[in-house]
Image (cartoon, rainbow over all chains, first blue to last red; front, side, top):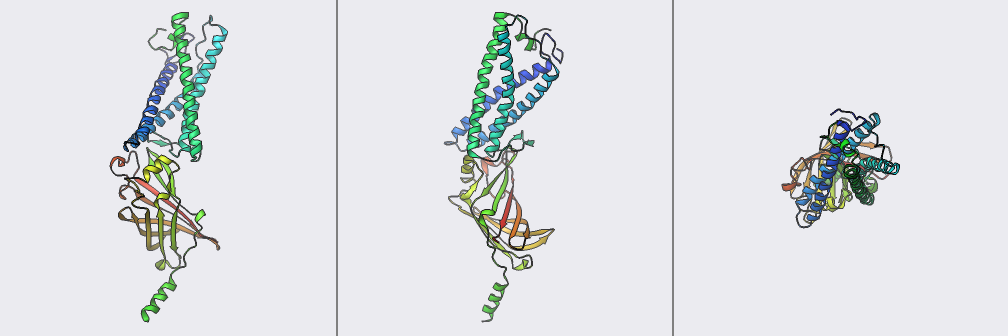
Length: 191
Length: 177
């Protein structure tokens, strides 16, 4: 597979970033859920507090990784056009697809950044895998921390809805339209 | 009589007690968790300072800290740090730093003293500078502590990869003009 996109399919870089980010987002969901469970378990088990700290530290490190990959992904896209939509695709579908993709890109920035903001407001600064400490974006503020956590979660829920639309559309292209759109993002498909 | 005269003489030689401007004075710290430094402070403390750069031998400082006044600006963490294994504020409501051993160092001074914390007494070195603008004095200083040596967060919290050993205490004392 070539590195850059062709008119027929996405290249290795775009595909790699797409699937890596998708996998990391799934990991993020489970880390956040486990951290929340550990937080709830603290009432009966004091050692759960350390588990919560470890899980949240990983969640933040992966979140910053996603933010970095999103920057890389948009930069790559800027210099390397994605393959065009199938000519037979109705214009309203193209509009929906475009909107969905740009909302995705926006969320790939907005979700990590609101998480980073919430960490700063909570006075739990972010360290990337214990190697680099990131600067705080805002001063400690309990009310703001709570609101930012809410926004962070709501944006994630929006991402889940978009992902459902995205997957449903990909399957429709594959099995109903049979136009090969899904295969453009699949590593094992032939050029 | 002679003893009394001598004691009043020594007493007279002691520097005046600083009148601390409490709202503008801070006792803060920087600790580390999960590889990230964060700050906190003690909101209530009493600094009994008799310090004069010209009278180092007669100078003294006693700082009493109300341990339950600790804040890291996050309720859950504050609950942990006030609880068992850490400050245990119910059993140990106060900590005390005390020094009478001052010497000049660079632009400022070094005070070697003791910190009474939980059940232990630990040697602590405090480095500071004093600026006197004629009306008020401003002391800024710090001490580097090792939380494991102080008996803080032993057991499950001991791993320094998650909770760093080094804690830096930052002090700002301002006197009323």
